Length: 473
Ligand SMILES: [Mn+2]
Image (cartoon, rainbow, N blue to C red):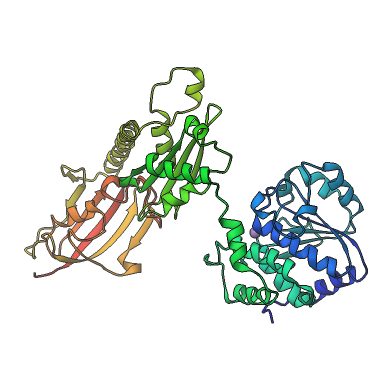
């Protein structure tokens, strides 16, 4: 049994509504994916088994790797066949909206869908569904896929007795594709319970996986290999991977749209890399695809884009509009220049802060600002010694990020720790028992990416530190 029990009144209304054979239309979002199409076709089979006449209408084409699904041949694509789509919508007695939270997600189908005057039922797992656009809403953002939600509904409504291998394989596909093959954290015991229910119908999971994922053409795989080997650059200091694909490369490998989709994931699969960017040239313009792990600063993205777009000579108007993919050295040089500019701006901000607060700070050769507040005869700090601090770390706008008051004292080994190099450099100037103030510029702190928690990219950090303990060895 499923753990989900739905509102008994809603359940009764829907069961009453479908108690006699009806004309049903199921629709889903623009560019349907595995979950959109899988849940739509899964529901289609069940409703047909319950005696209804059912049509799936999609706002636009779905990818060809989904066309093995039973029922996919009868799906009506609004772009290709607007007349049939409109006809089915106009004679529908019930409309199901699957896997989208806002009518705008059906794009060109929106006005026809919103003109429908019959009961509409939303089944979806996206955040913040638009209120009131359907008469009944099953909105469960914590569930990893619409297909899973749909099976919970089927089990609660007693419709799952009509499941068979065809419907179960459609639903299985929806869950598999929306959970990254069951690896995302949206996967729960309930997900596997639903999968167990579907497997009872004889789902051929190995075949489905192959049909969905093993669909690369030979030439596409060569293109991927070429791009990985020849057109991938690493900017290690910023944890960035950059891919480029020029028009001539694409022509050489008979590029089709989507061929390089997913290549950024290869970039992110490299240890420590946080950002992957693909610049691909098409018809004189450059498309930028960008993916990151964790938070990233917009400034950082701009830096990469500026670095990139200012590379290479621009000879024609067209090229000025369209930055050209370029070689690694030029890109590196350009990034260095952009970075210099950012650092200069940051130093100005630190100077202004120091002046505003009347601080008398010394500056080291690296650019660390510091002041040791009292003289003591405590133990000196040296490399490899363990230190323990009470401290606070704030941004120059006054926002407090970290403090030993809330997260306890900080202990680490000087020269062996991931703590900002500016902080470690400052502590090397201290003796046990002393207090100090440091302003650590971002390039001695958390750099242009920030720490992904509180400290944004390119931020100077104001530390107030008391050195509580220095180890003897
Ligand atoms: Mn989905």
